[in-house]
Length: 101
Image (tube, rainbow, N blue to C red; front, side, top):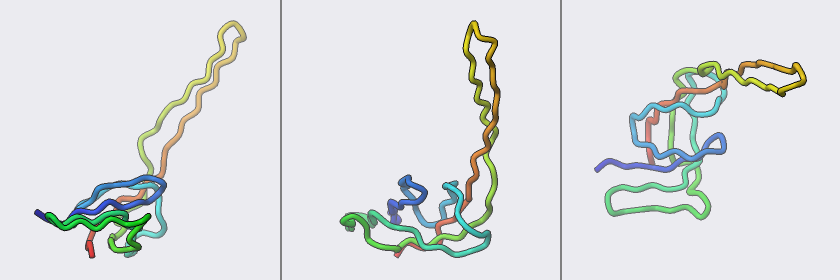
């Protein structure tokens, strides 16, 4: 069994393993190595739990920054001739987990 970790970024928590690629809330520049705040590391029967965190023990590389699919939001009030349509594209960063300490 390989090492897994629980990381926290962008106000969310993710369960990750080495070599995994995932999309997270937008981070800084492209092609940069980053360290992520680690909450838990598990390696077989050995488990390290942070109180509240273990520090920055997971290293990742930013692969790309982009925008997600468009989400259409419609506001409508009946009997008042009011309708408003807007769109939103959430920005994201794709990261690859390179090392779990």
